[in-house]
Structure formats: structure tokens, C-alpha cells
Image (cartoon, rainbow, N blue to C red):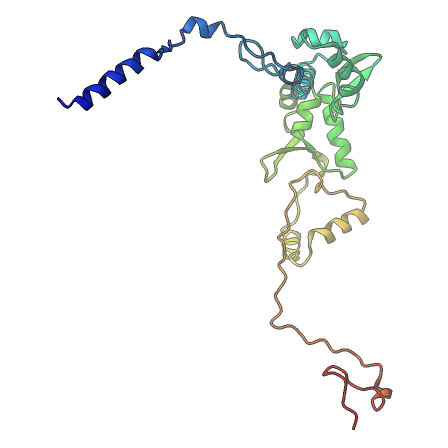
Length: 285
């Protein structure tokens, strides 16, 4: 073997022995589990408070959505008990007890008493107690018949079935008991309207008059003119409770070509005095 290579080999061994070696050990799972976590700042803890609980589930009891959810639950409960015949008023504590909302905070209770329930159009407040306030407060079938008769005499038309069911306890039983004293009419939006069936107005019309009635054209008369005529006669139409028609948007027609605008000249009397400087200063002759 080449003596030069042997010398380099011996020098390499001496350098390797003189240089200390450092061995890196892999971090164990136990040591990693005991590492200290950085403490959360007050800003981070306050932002997550009330949103996420310790087990990872969300807590919405402190949000505005939970408040309005409680209000909706209370109003629906008051409506249901009114429809079942329970029309007596309740205190807030009794309402919260029956709706099982006993875990709400004191701040939310104050919001319900001072703002939400007082200003709700479907809640009636009397001396610190609360009840349901329907559009038509009907006690029995006789009250419903009087309401329909009044609408018929005043030309107000019929009454929505939804409003009757909202204000009349056990409305289905009462409507069934009235029988042919009321008439049902279904609107294009599938909602039903109740009319008073005035049997005194039931008479036979001669066929000749029926033909004359059907021969009168009304295609040229729009709904606004009909409504205006009915108001002059003291009759109210039911357009406000019916489905609203959306008028099509009329598109503007594009002009074929832009018209040239003509400007009136006001200095014709100075035609021989004024000079044109658009091409520079004229050269004097």
C-alpha cells in the first residue's frame, strides 16, 4: 500500500479520537406531555367565553340568538295555550316554568319584562301578567258569526281562516258547528277565507239579467279603477289581505341613433367683429 495513504489514515484516526461525539436522544412521549403550555391572554379567554365549553361543545346561551329563540318559544306557547282555551294571564315566572326556561340569566329576564314581551304585538300585558293577543279575540262560535256578519254588512269582505284559528279557542269544533252559516273561499295562494252566508240574500235571478251581467266587458278596466269605484260606493276591497302581484319591469327602448343637439347662438349681431382664434393668432395683412 502507498505509504502516503497510510499516513493520511493514521492522521484521520487521531482527529476522530480527539473530537467528542454528541448523541441526540429522541424525545419521549412522557416528557412531551408535561410541557408547559403558554398561558392564554385575557383577550383570547374573553372572546371564547360563552362560545365553547370545556368538552368542545358550543354554548349559545349568552348570545342574542338564544334570547330571541326564548322569545319565540314563549310566544308560540302562549298562542298554543290560547287556542286550547287557556286564556287566563300568567306571570313571567309561570311562563318560564311551563316553557322550561328556568336557566336563563337575570339580565335576560329583565329584557323579556321591560322590552321583548311589552313591545311584542302578539302579547298583551296586564298588571305584570301576560297573555296572548290575537287579531280577533273570539270566545265562541257566536262571536265568530257576529264578526263575519259585521264584515258582510260593512262591505269588509271575509276573514282569513288563519286569523280565526289564532283567536278562537277550539276553532275547528266551532266552525264545524256553524255549518252552512259560513262559506269557504280558497285564494290563489291556497289560503282560505271565511264569509258570512246571508240566507236573506239568496234569491233566483232571471236568466235574462244573468246574460246582461255577463255581457258587460270589464277587460278595459284595471284593478285601480275598480278599487276607486268601490271606495266611492263605500265598499272596501280585499286587496290588502290578498297576494300581491309583482308588476313586470318595463325596459327602456334603446334609441336608434343619438340626436344632434342644436345650440342657439346669442352673438349673431357681432358676426363682423369677432375673430376665430381656434387655429392660432391670425396674421395681420
